[in-house]
Image (cartoon, rainbow, N blue to C red; front, top):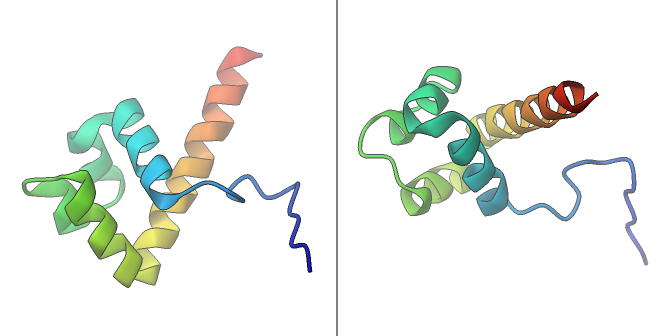
Length: 79
């Protein structure tokens, strides 16, 4: 059974990729302001953040939402 999701911008994108993109775009300080979670504000790292986000659905939803917002803003800036 194929689960094609051509309209879903998160389909096939790993949480690690999302987090790396957000850190590259915003930096840890701004990311910690945008999504107020401890692992982004105190000694942030990709591995510790991934561990927390994989166990915490509400935080993951906020990160995914910010990622989608960032994609929309980048697309808007190009046009």
